[in-house]
Image 1 (spheres, rainbow, N blue to C red):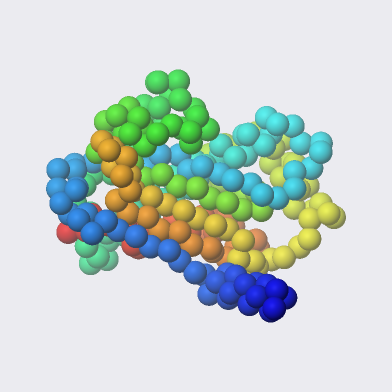
Image 2: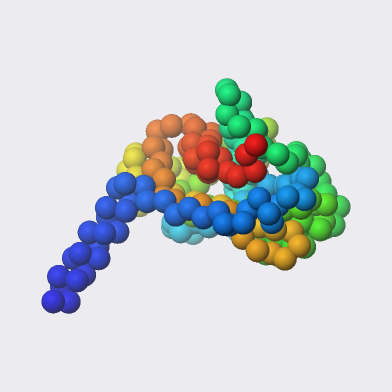
Length: 229
């Protein structure tokens, strides 16, 4: 019986990954709770790496890559939220603070990209002078490389080790895999309540440019974003 239960449990997980299962929530009284909202901000995205890091990589190398990835997902989501209002789609009723202003305001308070991952939504909203913040986390097994399309510069030696990383013999090659877990939440800046959230598992075709993978994930989250007129 235990083996049967385990089999069905694994089957359900496999089906969930295969179908790209998605969890979605929006507060039943969203319009009431947000009636006075004027602006929101997308804060740097928390990166969670679950793969194997080569022993010859330095901690600073890993931090630089993760910071760059965090910014790429932040910029991409900002763009997709704005883009999702075009083409006859309903526009959003709030202003979305520019991603660079968000990072600059945090830096002025000596809050780095990584530090922001551990600050409360209420504190971030107060610093950024917005009514709500979009927080998110991305969990994956591989690092991204070509982030130039987001205007992000990564040290040359980091780019080189990334190239070696993709050729490492210990890293099994799987070009397409459902291995990126994404979670997004819109949190009220006053009471910290969750107003909207979405989570899903997305496939990653590692033969594609990194920006194609990042933008596809951001676009999937943006499609369900609230505040629509």
